[in-house]
Image (cartoon, rainbow, N blue to C red; front, top):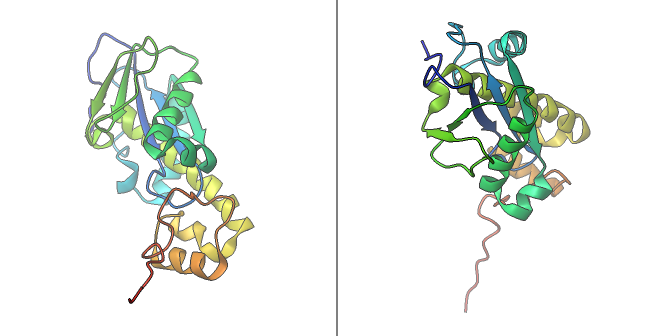
Length: 201
């Protein structure tokens, strides 16, 4: 069972992102404030859950949360500022949407760009330790997957409905065969060996 809070005095918001390692599409982040002593035996790191369970939990999280927000940073911005900064920006955008101001941010991971006037605590593998971060991971993942379905309808040859834009063999082969789309992150290594040249002298 994941912990309901990091401490008991301050209003906490758990924050997590989805899509950092993908070759295409936006990075999504979510911020979630859960009630004190909240319990949900099914809630866990989104990567440990089936798609069906994630979608069910999204309904429960949005129903039960005191506040939640989702931030999105597109692939053009990712290419401009790099994926790490884009992930932090998406979290900032998610926090901005909260209709209750948190007094402490619980960040999944070991680094974060401080949000103005709100202290934060970085927690490695926090989505497997605290309910609010797990809830944020579920929202970020499900909202991103929803957008990936729309991307797939537009460009079905890349199998984004299955690989979620991660660098699978099929995805890379499709890039070689069909080229890149407006959704691809040009700052990433999109090709299997980034098209290494065999030069003989």
